[in-house]
Image (tube, helix red, strand yellow):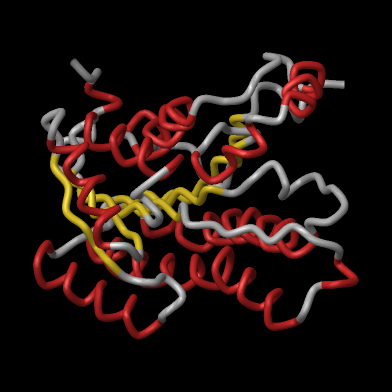
Length: 255
């Protein structure tokens, strides 16, 4: 049984990019803690599989198919959430895209697309969610940032800029929305073995490097991201806001 301080019974959550990878594990964990989860994504089949995986273990979820960079579609979706459920308790901004290449070779339209997806869309979703949460006098916003927010590497400038911006946005919204009972925190993943980077995970040289570079000496299992998110979403974190929790196997701490 879930301890009361970690229970999400009766809560309504929205997870963007919840159909695969870290997003799916977050979705399943929220549902296991008692939340009803709206699973966002762009592909109908993938969302249906995600819903099925949640309901198969006794959780409650429904698909919410839309592109989060489509402002009109987001506004329509939140209007429907308001009409159908009257509230949104938890927003998880998980969607992210990456485009690794030299800064000098980055076309501006590609940079805008990446920043629109990783930062601007999150800004919009936070604004829409906050308007619902303010009416209820409480809410939880959790942004999935990255260890690429506080540190950087070559060939990843646009992503690093977007995730750094999302980390800063998290602090700014915590300062602005706290008076309404809304907490805003971030979870910064390190190196996780997900479907989207299977080719990198299979690279033995990277595995050897990661073994030396991280305190725990391995890739993260996608399931290992979920506990931090459930914690921030739960009553156990009621007096925590504006914080970024790195879930990185000790990468940032390791010298």
